[in-house]
Amino acid sequence: MEERSRVAPWAPPRAQRRLVELESETDGLGLNEIVRLVDAVLAEHRGRLDEDGVVLYAGTNTMSERARAAHEVSLGSRPSMGWPGDKFQTGLDELDMLEVLAPLQVAALMGGEFAEVRLQSATLANLACYTAFARPGDTIAVLPEAAGGHASHHAQGAAGIRGLRVVDLPYDADLFGIDHDALPGFLHEHRPALVVIGASLMLFPHDVARVRAACDEVGAVLVYDASHMAGLIAGGRFQRPLEEGAHLVTMSTYKSFGGPPGAAVVTRDEELARRVSAAAYPGLTANYDASRLAPLAVTAAEHAANGPAYADACVANAKALAAALAAQGFAVAAPHLGWTVSHHVAVDAAAFGGGDRAARLLAEGGVYLSGIGLPDQAPGEAMRGLRIGTQEVTRRGFTPDSMLEVAALMRGLLIDGRDPAKVLQEAVALRRSTQ
Image (cartoon, rainbow, N blue to C red):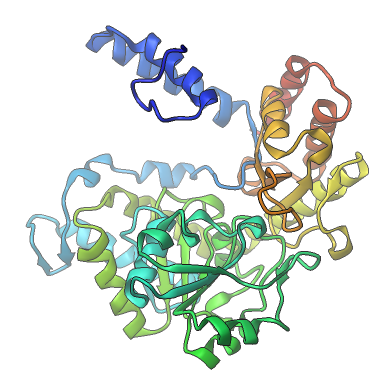
C-alpha cells in the first residue's frame, strides 16, 4: 500500500505522491534549515514565474513596483474592528485614512458609491451577498459551471454553505451568453432571491440591462461577479455593470485589477451597502489583513491614471493571440463571434487530451495557464478547454507582436511535439526580452 500524506491523507492519488515527496524533504528540519528552505523556495518561485515564465493564467497578476512598495506587512497583524472614530482598538489613526481612501477609490472606479473592501477573497464577497440578501433554503440562479460559473456560485461552494438551492440559468452555448428568450419564464418558475452573472471565462459582456429587467419582474437581486473583469471595468472597457443595472458587483482586487489579493463588493445603493457591510463585519470577518489597503489604494490610483490604456492593451493582446493561435492551427473558441472582446481567450484542447493535460504540457515549456470547461461540454465531461488571460503579460510589457511568439511556443509544445526543454529556453528568452 502506498504511503499516504500526513498533511492531507484524503487528497487524490496524484496529489498524494507530491505531498509525500514534499513531506519527506521537510522531516527533521530545524530553524536554520527551514529558513534556508523558505529562502530557496521563494527564489525559485520568483525565477520560474516572475522572471522567466510566460504567465497566461487568467486568475493571477503582478502588482506594480509602487504598489509593492506600499505593502506594509505590520498593518496585517494590527486588529482593526469597527469604523474609523468608533473602533474597539486604539492607535490606528493612520489605518483609518486607508480604510476611507481605498473604498472611495474602488467605488469610483467601478461606477459605484459604496465599496466594502475588508473581505479577503471574492468567494467571501459572494458569500457576503448571499448572507445579506438570501436565507437558507432560498434559490439562487447562476451560470452553469461549464459556462464559467464559479464554484462559489454553486452548491459545492459558498452558495451551498449558505444553504441555498442552486439552479443554472438558461444559457446559449453558441453565443457564449445567457438565453434571454428563456430567462423571464425561467425566473418566474424558480423565483430566485439572487441572480449571479459574471464568470471565470468571459469572452463577451453580458446584456446586464436585459437580465436586470427580468430580475425586477420577480424581485431578485442581481449580482455581477467581476472577479476576472474588474481591471477592464475600472478602465472603462468591456462593460459597466452597475451603470447597466446590476445591484451589486463583487470583484477580486488582483487578477485583472492587479492589486493585492482580496476582494470588494461595490454598489450604488446605500441600503444594499449597509447590509453587505453588516455581513462582512461582524458577520464574516473580525480582524482582517489591513496590509492590503495601502497597495490597493495605490493600484486604484494607477487605474484612475492609466486604466483605459492598460485595459485596451490587455484586449489588443488577447485579440492578437486568438488570431495567432487560429493561424497556427488551434481551435480557438467562438470564431463566429470574433473570438473575444475581453482579455480572455479560450481554446478547445480536445485534440491534446483535454485542458488539464494540455496545460501541464505547456508548463513544461514555460507557458503557464489552466484548463477550463467549455459551454458546449456534456455533463460530467472532463474540462476540454484551455483558458488564457493576457493581464499579466501585458503588465510585463508583451505586445501584439509578442503574441505571435507565444502562439508559436504553444504550437511547438502541443501540435509539433517539440522537446519541452528547448521550448522552455525560447519562452525564457521571450520573457526576458520584455523586461
